[in-house]
Figure 1 (tube, rainbow, N blue to C red):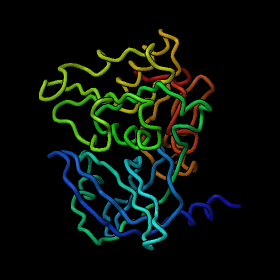
Figure 2: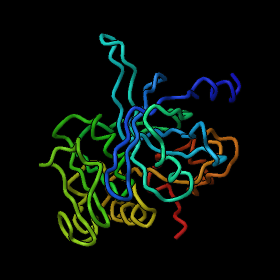
Figure 3: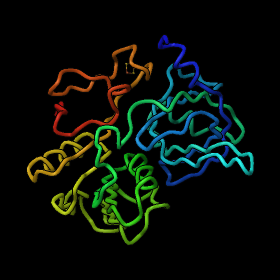
Length: 262
Ligand code: FES
């Protein structure tokens, strides 16, 4: 099977079902997705039909509601998005009912590299918009097997489905939860596994902490992506095994294998 035929099969124009503001800077889009079910950690390329931005935008799925055959409803996939660049600002102007081309689910998923992924106790660590794939994983994990650590600059978002008694929040400005960086409160040795997504300096700090304490750690990396399917080589992640493509070899990597730029 050629690469392009596989891609075509997964590319669908989907209707925006719901738009929600989470904070002034972050919003959530939910689409009707009749394609294959995504696993937590996988991502989609999003490109509005009326786009003036040439490339699609890679976004990890933040939520997935499977189809309901009894009611004849298709699945719903959700994305939490920070208004950062031209592409995401364009997504912020979408109206319900508008069509967006979704290509996915792409990449690997949280459990793909780790046969023991579902055995707790587990720490999920999300920083800022990196909350999204961690929250999606929390929905797949058995209740009571994980603690969720959410780090934010200011007001938290995206934690609606996280059980409050297993959720620790830290904000840099102290507006909610504890004041400080989320890593100041994480003790990896309390867990069998640590899974993290967030800004790269945070991921490096989590990776270092887990390595020092001998706790296996898996991280979801972010890169600019032109094709999303392994063809353009524009999404390199440097690892101890050489260069890897974030879109097809990731976005989840074993933390100890990643060579961070900073
Ligand atoms: S985005 Fe093109 S190879 Fe990864």
